[in-house]
Image (cartoon, rainbow, N blue to C red; front, side):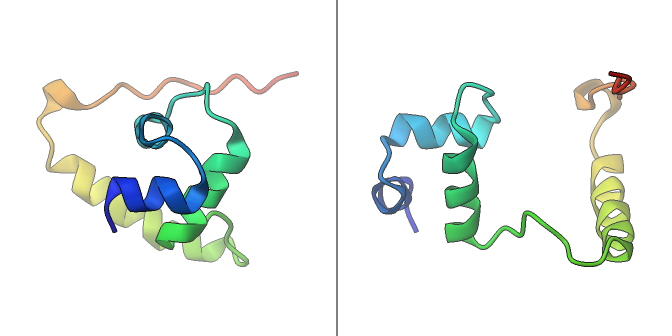
Length: 80
């Protein structure tokens, strides 16, 4: 599916779809959910234990990237 086709199905401009792809915080979360659903990206997992294998696969792929392009992990401050 092309960008134009996907944007049309979601009901947004192609530029908004590009913002979704870049992870822009300016895009409404509902549009992000709609785009993910249409392209088959699961957003929620019914069983948390399934996430472990997926995280390991992503980390293996990221390990192949040169150190210069990897982002440093920052500690999440969720102490409200």
